[in-house]
Length: 83
Image (cartoon, rainbow, N blue to C red; front, side, top):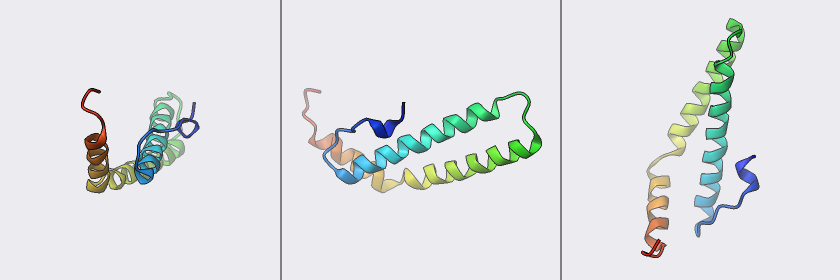
C-alpha cells in the first residue's frame, strides 16, 4: 500500500504535501534497509544501496526542519482539546 493513495486530513495543504513526501521517503528507506539485509549482496549492490540510503537520509534530515515542526505544532493547536 502506498501512502499517496490515502488522504491525509490536515488543514494546511503544504503540511499535507510534506507529510505525504515524508511518508514516501520513509517507505523508500524501509525498502533500502530490507534490500541491504539480503545475504547474497554483491559489493556493487551494497554500494548502490548505501548511496541511495545516504541520499534518503540527507533528504529526510533537510525535510524535517523547523518549518515542518512549526506546521505540525500549528496543526495541533487547531485541533479540539477533546481528542
